[in-house]
Image 1 (tube, helix red, strand yellow):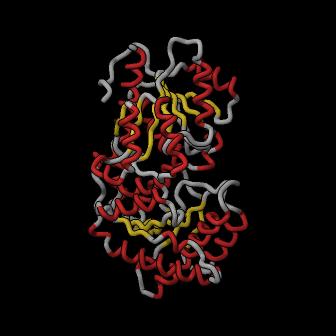
Image 2 (spheres, helix red, strand yellow; image 1 turned 30 degrees about the vertical axis):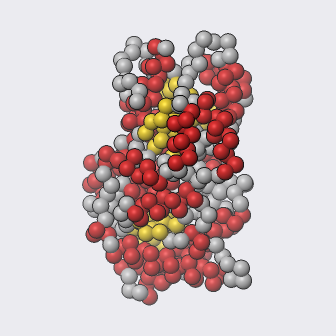
Image 3 (tube, helix red, strand yellow; image 1 turned 180 degrees about the vertical axis):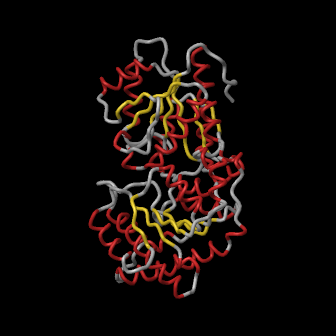
Length: 409
């Protein structure tokens, strides 16, 4: 465990490098936003490799920004001007997309220096083990001073023991910090809002965005999810469910395909009180979530964590039926009594010989049943303990402790 944070006349400097450009996942920047908040609270200077200028919900106020698409010379110049004491990679679980490129840039920038900032990788507690990355993980581990797992140690039995074994054998420092969520979820304002529920239902896709590289099958699955979700309101009306009389807010990312959006708008017009809206910025979304009667969502990692902190009934559906990470996490949520109702991911896939209308009909009935179950059990639902979600502050303290250690070495 790192030493306690030491006082210093010069503020410690931390560089954050998310593992994807923002169009591949808002969640990674949401997590970085929380770390930035806590690091600034503790007096650190922060820089972030980011392409978030085009997305207003992530301000990173006071942080030095290094463009995600910076050239090698630009990156090295900005790096040496900032002079980080520690570099934090958000990985899944190790190098992805451009991160290895940045590691190469860092090595080149400090090639003739006696000092090189330590590299730390932050990984999820549960992740999809892919055999082809085994050799890569063994090769890359020695690049890091520490590996920080964000998750609840009480649930460590759900982690893949092979990764823990690799880390232990490598001699790299293994640390844990708990789950990392927006601290607003434990504020007095949040508690007050959650006690005054509005008559609304929230439907959304989580933080991931479709990109040109997203498989068409996954795009179609998401589209079917939205259509079936809207049509499930009619199923609930036939069952005389109170949910059918509420206002449904279907939140689409602004980049959602225009033709698919038009189809969703047309289907929503056939039902009463179904509003198709752009996904609001993060503060507005969190407020809507805690005040709603129920949330129906695709089970993105950060969305799941946010819902775990609330007393809002929740129904989630994995993005894909073969995603081992999400299936393991759903099993953990079920076995630890976190109050999630899950829709089997395979229901999101249209079977061969099945028409789109038949598939949507089956899926909408399953969604309606799951929503009824979650809503009927709302009085038994309690929010998770705050101490399980203070990982942002704890992670920030770990980074500053490592920064102080690197300064004194």
